[in-house]
Length: 200
Image 1 (cartoon, rainbow, N blue to C red):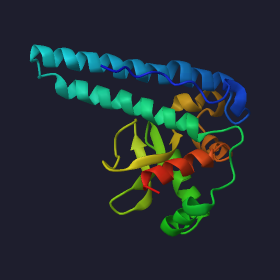
Image 2: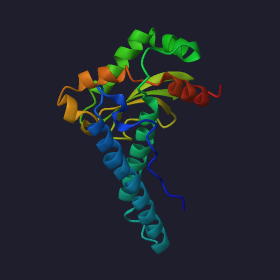
Image 3: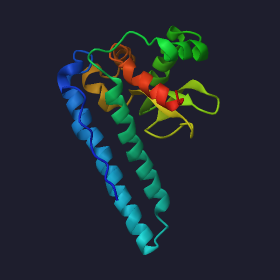
Image 4: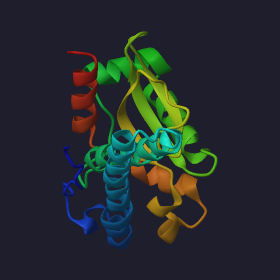
């Protein structure tokens, strides 16, 4: 059975300063993200053992734990790639046009994603996603790593709203942290995800 692995960061831990300190980024990647990878792998082993023994009574809890850890791994992997020390500005081309079509303007989209991220209750994510049935962009407010998500959506741009992503630097002022993320967005990565998701 294949194992999940912690991806290398696409830049040095200090590369996103001053918006995100190197200390936070290292803890976030090497400790928190690594824990989700380990959790997903460990839970897969426990699921296999339960199947082998025919012990299906505990599957509900194991499946939930697996979804939590795997989703944490997936979202963090996207998050690192969504950010860049050379990021910022706004997208043009097809993604820029789609944002204007589905949200009215880039500024309206920015306000919606910022608000979704800043107001997540407890821990979670703000996500720009592609919804293929309606062939449209949507903003999702994800609880933890996997709650309140459309089953068919593909995340394109993700903002981590867990306290471990910002608290050492921004304390309880999550909106200030979210505003700083806009200056780090790697729109080339987001555009590539958008093109792949819609089959362009």
